[in-house]
Structures are given as C-alpha cells and as structure tokens.
Image (cartoon, rainbow, N blue to C red; front, side, top):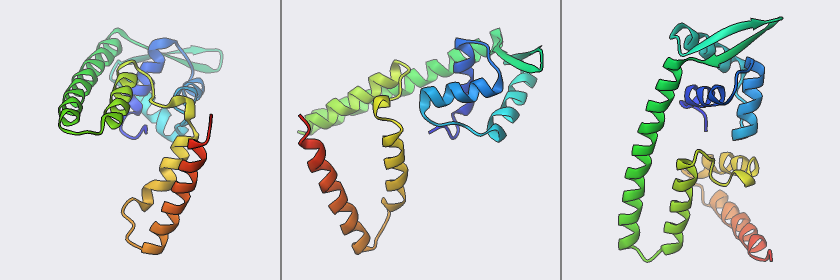
Length: 167
C-alpha cells in the first residue's frame, strides 16, 4: 500500500498531531495496518526536515516532529490532486457502469472511491486480513500452471460459500 505514498501518509499523520518517529510508525500501523520500517521512516523524516516541510524539536531524549506551514500547503496540494484523480476515476466508473449490466460492481467501486475521498481506507474494518489475502493472491494473478490455478479456484469457491452462509 504505502510504497510511493509514505511521504503523504507521514505528513497526514503529522498534520493530526506532533509525534516522535516511533509514534509516527505506530500511528501509520493503526491507520493503515502496515508498519513502515525505521529504515524508511527516519531518512524520509530527515529529507522532509531539509525541505522545511516538517520541523523537529528535542524533548528530553526524543525528537518530536511537526508539520510546517509549507508542509500543510504541500499536503493540501497533494489532497487536491488526489481528489481530481478520484473524480476522474469516478467519471470513468460511471461511464463504464452505464454501458454495463454489472450494477453491483459499480456500487462496490463507488463505495471504494467515496471511502478514499473521505480519507479512509476501503474495507479497513476487514484489515489486516484483506491485506494478507491480497498479498498472498497477487503472485498467482499471472500464474499459468493449471494445477495451481485449480487449487486457488477451489479455495476461493469454498471461501465464497462460507462467506455467503453468514447471516
């Protein structure tokens, strides 16, 4: 999830409150169910500091990071671009759904877009299980070996049946 988006995620968390690098990693884990490594977070914090997007204050033996006015402006610009992209995607979804008879798929896509627009992670209430499932399934999306595909289909059918039986 976070690859390529860690900068935005970190700035958004620092917009909410000032915190240490360790607290920032935990806040990201709480929000996105993925804990970035210190090797990703601390160099990026240093880079953001050099760009005057965040500032650092020493509090006892901790460094407390906070977003600057320049950082807030940058975050606002990123959010604006994100909204433009989501609106464009939504337009495309509406167009495709108008041409298709798969209204349930359209409903799902609209739900996901609206969750993202609202700053939420779609299906967050099912994480981290969905993330584990996705990460497990992705390597097989290009699989050509019929035996493996057959096993995956069998597992998916069983899972679908089990979920469908929930009342």
